[in-house]
Image 1: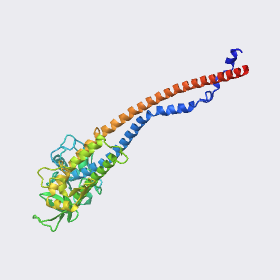
Image 2 (image 1 turned 60 degrees about the horizontal axis):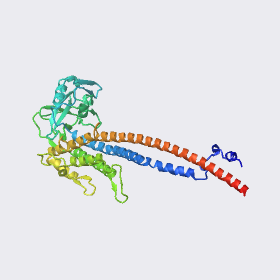
Image 3 (image 1 turned 135 degrees about the horizontal axis):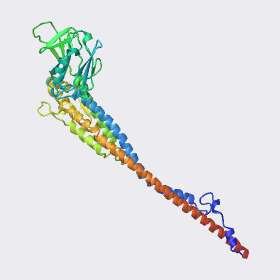
Image 4 (image 1 turned 90 degrees about the vertical axis):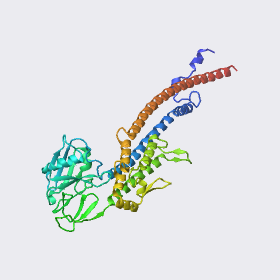
Length: 420
């Protein structure tokens, strides 16, 4: 026999169309199992990405709930200003539009923007169509800027007030018939004076001349008259209930996002999250706000109580109403004063939600981690792909070698059989 016959009988590796055909070994299955094993390195990265995305979504939900609390706290603080001399932003203009359609602009460039400064500037410009005074209601934020139409009749009424100074817009922003922090006092032909301040009204029932007081005019008399005054505390009670509802919404959202199931031993998106813990801690701190020196002192003396199981707040409107009748200044100081619960929740939500605040920092940090994980995932994927290419080449070479060995074995068997 000639040795050249052995070479002539070897198979052509290029004719092997499927891995394992030449060797008869399950090389394709082995390669898939190796790839599955290599891909396992990607799963922890994917799990971290899923966790971070869930946390980002949870941050959004918690931010929404805190936004509701922020709105409720502003509601309480908008009843008045703590100071009549503190500046409200810098410069800007205020546009007064009257019911007859005319508009007049007050330029505050270089002028005092405190309540006292605004009153002086408004009273110095008769073309604005309004005069101004400041009323002190004796509360923790007692100073209210009262605007009065200079002329009687409905056409002289103020239809809207707007400012390009954000601080002044918050205080004076007003559109007739729409809700705002400015109490509407329609111009009319009825005239009265409160401590020498001229006030007009289109009826004998005057609302808004003094915040929280309705004046019933019984007779016309040049001498001082005794007026019957009744309290309308519905707005304050409604605002307090709004704060309670907003607080409960934040708390329930927080509890849902941080819950831990002991049965399945699984957590929620923000279980153990530092930001969630910060929000919870600051909520409880704000709720414990007290005003030193006041007769009421604590928020829980206003008729609020806490459910021991859920932590949810509830408000006894009758208790709050009674306190508003007996001690309105202390109640409003505790609810809306700068050192009261309204101010505490404003500070809390501002610190958490403002640009550069806790939520902004946590979100930026999570996004940075996601970017790092994406890079890590891509690098690992590339490494796995390269490793699988190496395995595939090795298996292909093994398959070809085995095919050649099998072919040689068959040839030798045939030759030996012939010799026998």
